[in-house]
Length: 142
Image 1 (cartoon, helix red, strand yellow):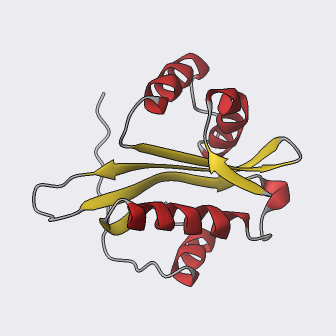
Image 2 (spheres, one colour; image 1 turned 120 degrees about the horizontal axis):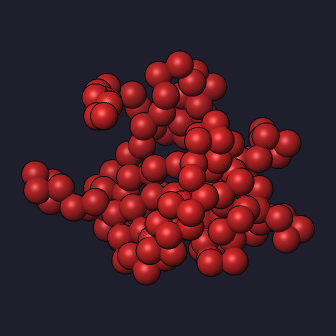
């Protein structure tokens, strides 16, 4: 198992995993353009778990500078492991790597959101030292 920075060659594998996470609602062409743009963004941090040349996990995050905080925040946008590879420590390795990156970048915290009904994910994050601190509110725009 190798944890490494995301690369252009990983586009298909990352798309497949994220599309699973988002219930097949990602538009491939929009995803491809954003993926390439993010690879050149200094605030973007994406890593993959690779096993036998296959992408089996992905973590997408970004550095955020909030006006009211003295240090940066690493915000995890997405974390998913291939359903056939779960419960093998891959998610924990991805999370640990991102926390190490946050420390290296002198971040104050690592933050993320999780769907309210996804209790299995909540337990995973709590078991890895995260606390429930906020509710996220959302208004869909037409």
